[in-house]
Each structure stands twice: as C-alpha cells, then as structure tokens.
Image (cartoon, rainbow, N blue to C red):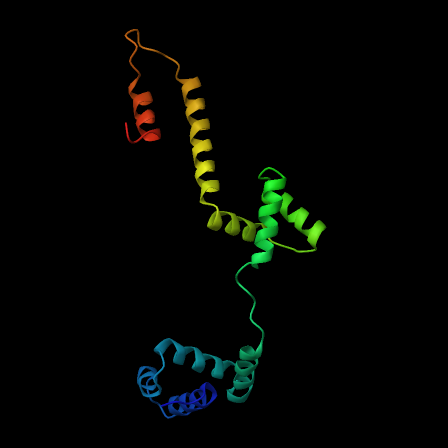
Length: 163
C-alpha cells in the first residue's frame, strides 16, 4: 500500500472513529503503533483538517544543517595553530571578528574532538600528571627501606598500567 501520509492519516482517523483498536490500525496501514497514537492524539487536539495543514507545513520547512561546514573547520584549525591551541571562546571570538561566522562552543568542541584525537588524549595525560603531582606532594612520606606506600603503588599502577 503506497499512499501519501495525509491519506494515511485520514484513513487512520476514520478507522479510529469506527472503533478499531490502534494496534490493528497500525497493522492495516503498515505504520508503527506509536505513529498511529501520535496521529490520533494530534487529530483529537487540533481536528483533522488543521492537523493535516500543520503536518504538511512541518514537512516543507528547510532543515537545519547538523554538520559544521568544512571551510569553517579549516578556519578553526588555522586559528588554533596561530593562537597556540586557545580555548573555544577565543576561537569563537576570532571567527566572528575575522570571518563573520558564528560557531557555538559546543560545535567547536565536537570539531576538535572528532578530528584531533591527540587533543583529548593530551588533555587526559596532562590532567593525570597534575593529579599525580598533587598526590605526590601530599604523600611524601617515604619508608626507610625506600619502598613506596601502598597508596602510592596503587596510584602508580593506575598511571602506568603496563608496569
């Protein structure tokens, strides 16, 4: 059965008014049961003709692009190299000032993490090193025979799992 959705919605509403269960309507029209529930709920809320108009209008709108344009990605990389890997807010500022492009910080993070895995790996490594340094400064108690304490040993194994 190859019909337009507006025809299917009308058929769905007529079958529902006749008392047919929603799951049977879904089987008959070849649509998912949840889709039938949504259609019936909206027809009850707005009426059949107004819902069909809203439904058709929603399908005509231009969809928002989900991916960042490759040219913008190239601009981001050039700014990052030029400004020594600065933060997202600064890159957002430079993009707007130099190219007139608004890029949210969230999109910037997605671009950086997806296309530069070393950035996230380096950030993890640096944060681990800083944590280890703080830990070492707090726990500088050495045992006279030169062995590490149990906590230090566990932390060292966490940092260097291969040892």
